[in-house]
Image (cartoon, rainbow, N blue to C red; front, side, top):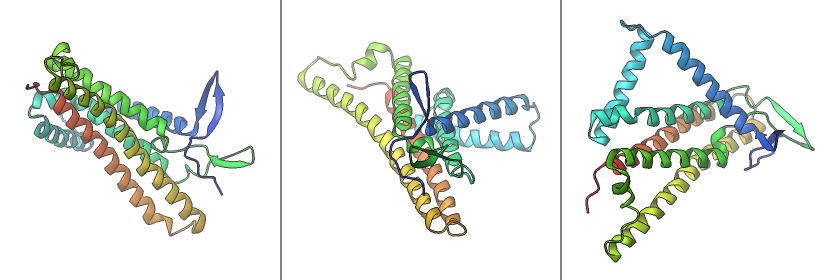
Length: 243
């Protein structure tokens, strides 16, 4: 039986850098999405076929959802790449993590066994990294939307003691948001990985199938929630600050 480890297992050293099984699957997810993007890009037509029509419908629905939150179609189109890319990458990584056969590739090292591939979101380094990047990007977009000094005044305002204190709370809020996003995604995905591992160990054939579908649903919901929280953060940061 494979061991349950919170820390991602190291497969090999690449220079002084440890290459883990979660990083391996995240690179597979990234490569698949890049290849799929190139293939779909070459298939774009002025008169769309069924696949292109379905994709355009999904994008249109997502833009409608973003427009209702941001209050502007222009903003929705501007921030679509960040929100959609975050959702697609996290969901694809979660989906590949529970894909049949992925867990069958087992590495035996130092008297212990672990999967060659591990769902990236079950590694806190991955979720923390993507949370930091997305929170930073929301602030970068805010700077372009309202101006550098105006956005900075949200965090550093020396007008009066109350404004200064509110700015400190805003800084704490951004740090707490990063931690919250990373731990929420990590906790749900890691718990699902542990559940599937236990079920497969006890009843390896028919019983795990409902749990696989449940984890697919959970992976979708967690990816969607993560993206929507980023969208709400964009909406708050890119609005004009009122004193």
